[in-house]
Image (tube, rainbow, N blue to C red; front, top):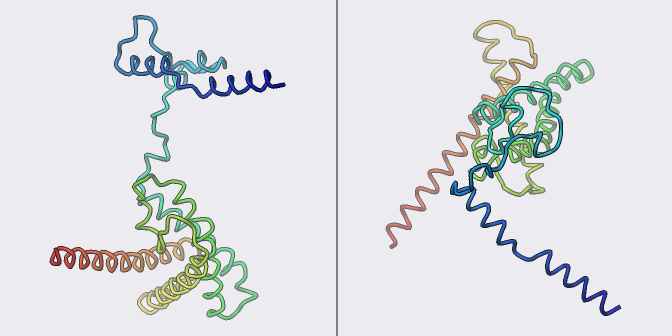
Length: 223
């Protein structure tokens, strides 16, 4: 029994040994010092053994650093489209779906805010976190950009989006006064929601910037 345990421990130790020869091979490949004919292949058929029907070199060759089509879309466009789509969905399911059962505009407004806040905290913000890199490029499109999900942000988002939809309601009242009666529908509703949302986020970001700049100046003066 002791001999078997010793053999097992030796196997485990060997398993975790640093494979220096593999590191040397990788360095040689990166430096271009590999002998002729020994360069690593990028052909998917040779790597995986799968038969590739396409004759396209792009489809046959494996490139781990190739950017996909989603990565080519600008961050601001993806963020605004995601926000617009979910705001329009809220309008479709709440205002158009439940409007006949909830005649009160105030009740609909509150329901819009609660549902959109829930979606923002549970769906939209996690999508942004999934898409972002270490640069946190989606933070300017989130009202409460905390790296780790906080329990209180759910209620904060619900309250915040209730205020946002109050602004959306004012947009509809203003356009009805200036032009003519405009029906509530998902496309324009989503545009108004994103516009009001980004105005509030912009004000928040400006306040944060001014506070940080004031602290930096105070720190510089104290040095």
